[in-house]
Image (tube, rainbow, N blue to C red; front, side, top):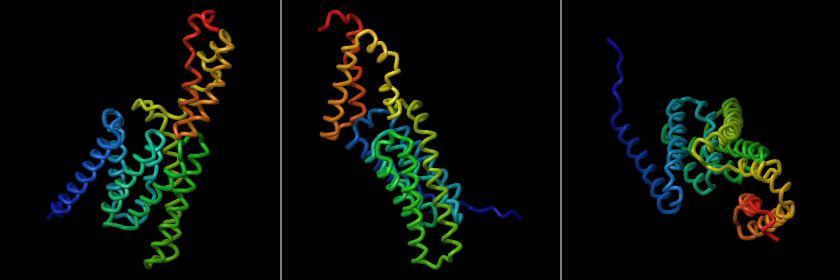
Length: 265
């Protein structure tokens, strides 16, 4: 006779209720605290895809000893921080961590591992305006995740070989998260129509054709724009606004003078 396993309908029902509750809370949070995101279908779709992809990976590796610890789940928090904001990234990280713990056991260790590792990455990545910040975020994720597995190993009965194995898994997870974030955030930004820091840095480059025209055809206006950009950047830093987008906007605020440079003094 064939050994056909019947599905555990109680477990499926519990998982369905938990998933529905978390999705409802995320939607409610966006509706109340991020109405700008709520009215942008591309942002909602991006968040759903990231959480769905993380859930799929967790379900594939569920029940394994070390594989769930290797998953670069912290990359989700890094991507949401760079593409949207840190507060939304924290919410998504909490949801992913709950899913990670629920799918595997439930496992408190894996849930804390995913939660604290993701939060460490969010704190370290900040604005993600340099490649170095992604590497620093990967290092922070590794340190926190290694401490988590070590702490739970001391609380339990895991031997030294198991601890070393999970620390290696934490290193692979942190490195994979940094690499995945670096390799995909620009692509995701373009696909979903989200402005990234690197696009702003490219616009601020003096070799941009429009800025070059401004320098050649209206040099006085060009130098004025640079001065306004520096002043506006310092003012934005003082009040907690985004200094980069402020500086870039200041660079381009007088490009209309290219139409008739002689009409301005």
